[in-house]
Image (cartoon, chains in turn blue, orange):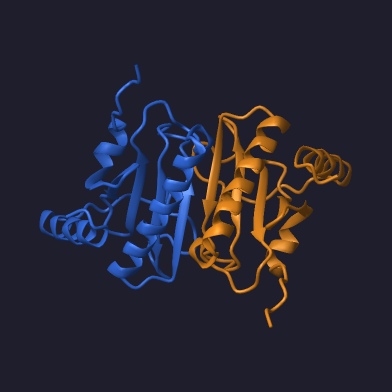
Length: 138
Length: 138
């Protein structure tokens, strides 16, 4: 029997749930400095990309592309940053972040860069709604 | 006529060439603090993963998996970090880095972390040889 998927508590605490794509739960990082999505394949016991079955890896990278398109549609950006690190949170998750020249971490990485600036409630609700629509999750 | 592939001069200056996989040139970052490969698809004009044709994206992620296996075979590590950033060097490239608890940047990202420690010549030659063998590039 397969263990159920449970979202890591740290990821849950740092993000808003946008919704579920076929493989991944899509999260919005609660940091208004960056438009930042996190994709978490809904399977237990994964920590590396290679822990996923080959077919699921293909689905994951397709979902990363969908997240990329959604970020580009949501706001102008100069570069998309994609990262699978997991040094702190071991549950497999992939970051997809819209970067703008001059943003709070530019040109460095967003990970470990300063302190998150939480969204206010109205902004996060509106943004999650727009992201859900863009990802066809409505 | 397609423009020829020319490796970005900054990437070239920071790395040793390991060899060519079917899609990507494999580079070893000249930083003895981390066992760190960089994969650069040998096509001109790419800056985002999505700039690659779908089939080539599949090949790229397969080559990232091969790089992952090679790093794990080369030394014990706790986590593989995968990143496609490109904020500074826009030519599409994917980092694949073996991370060890307590390494020079742990648990933060390697990008932008301190100053690279160059390999001595004997170590880099030996390491490139081992990596070529592990990637079946001999």
